[in-house]
Length: 102
Image 1 (tube, rainbow, N blue to C red):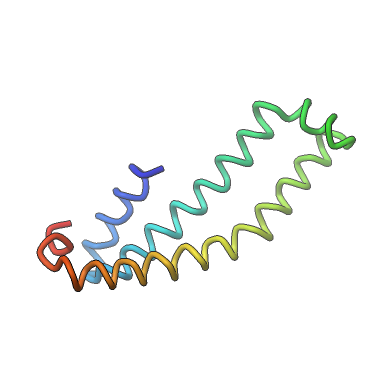
Image 2: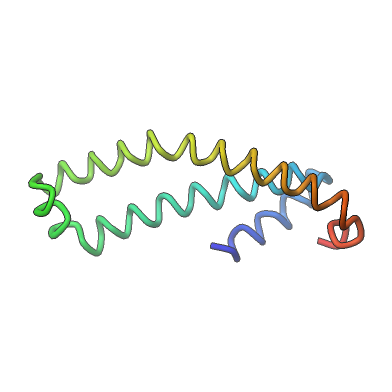
């Protein structure tokens, strides 16, 4: 995950020219990727066992996971973007030389 966020940050920094904005974009992309990968891998690797443990069908599990992605991912992205932009602002003012090199 860190590799994805790092490359997104470098790409966004090239076009945004603003460290906090680039950090917010990287946080949003990383959070979306993380949520989809974790829940997707639960369905792929443990779908039958997980649906049986919940007492629902595999198709219903897919719907439940889609619902979880839809409802939880939005607040997660908002929190990640706000916190990362605040952190980037604080750190870029303290470590100006390091932030400009990134």
